[in-house]
Amino acid sequence: MKNPIYVVMLASIAIWLTSCEQKKEDNEESKVFMLSDTMMSRIRIDTVRNEAVRNELTLVGKVVPDENQVIKVFPLVGGNVEEVNVELGDNVRKGQKLAVIRSGEVADFERQMIQAQSDLLIAQKNLSSTEDLFESKLVPERDVITARQMVDKAQAELSRVKEIFSIYGLGKSTNYVVKSPINGFIIDKNVNRGMQLRSDNSESLFTVGQIADVGVMANVNESDIPRIKMGMPAEVRTISFSDEVFKGKVDKIYNVLDPDTKAMKIRIQLQNVGFKLKPEMHATVSLNFEEGNQMQAIPSQAIIFDRSKNWVMVYHSRTKIETRPIEVYRSLADRAYISVGLKPGEAVISKNQLLVYDALND
Image (cartoon, rainbow, N blue to C red; front, top):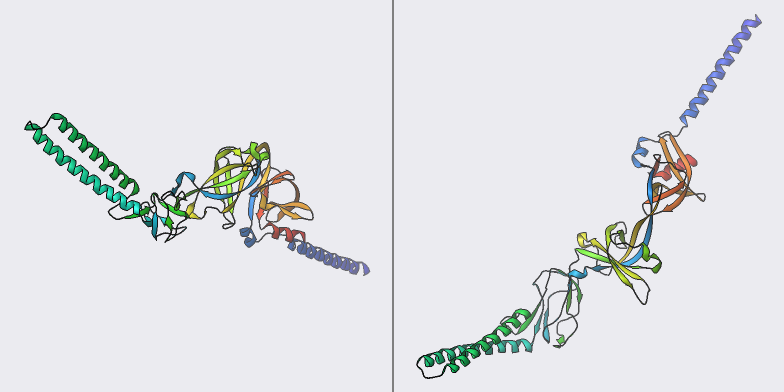
């Protein structure tokens, strides 16, 4: 009787133990980390690639208008400024009135025009009369030649005065109108209503510049001059648009050093879409150049710095994500070069990876 009861008891104990083990395994499986669909939609996975190592040179500069599309407007006459029709920063069209100067010089030019027209008319009438007298044998031929010379002289004087009117843009009024020579923006203004201008004034009244294309003038230290090449790609950032990167290239190298700063200037040409970049804005310029060697590269945003080390989250599957230490050779704004820790073709999480790191390592 004891043996059957003993057998039954052993069987019951075995079943109970098996059930406990099964529950333990089920609990362990339920604790395995797995990325949810929501989390998968929030992360970004990038592939490790073998790339040429780039270096970055950071320079400080300022935005300047294209020097080939900037015109200074000088007063061609002296006088009293009656009107100023534009302000600093205004967008103007070619031929638009910028200011009006009431000038005694313009009045004198008008007098010269009237005088030249009158002299030509008198000379022409004198020539006609002389030719009639010559045909009647009443005057010698030299008088006709002299009369023709007087007509030519009067015609030349009238042409000279007309050319002055054309150059100065004068009309029938004694006022001199200052007009914009090109389409652009008023980037400098040195005149106000009521000012008295001398005829020998050497200061420009306005500076008009087109800023659809602008440049960034940057200073290069002597030690960095050998790295600068024509056509180098450049990225420009400004305080006003801190989240936006303006891309251009080096289009001018000024092969002289400033005697005060001992720096060489370069110019980066940029398209100014929406006129966001304003002349005199401060800018930070990043120039990229290749060093010649190759290394594993990933987005610099993928790196996590914790416990005095650099880490990346290596993605194998939704349930298998590895926290791996790495050694960074160089980190730029967008790319980081890894000397130890990664192989080409491996996948790393480069967006919201810190959430995954905290979930796996807490």
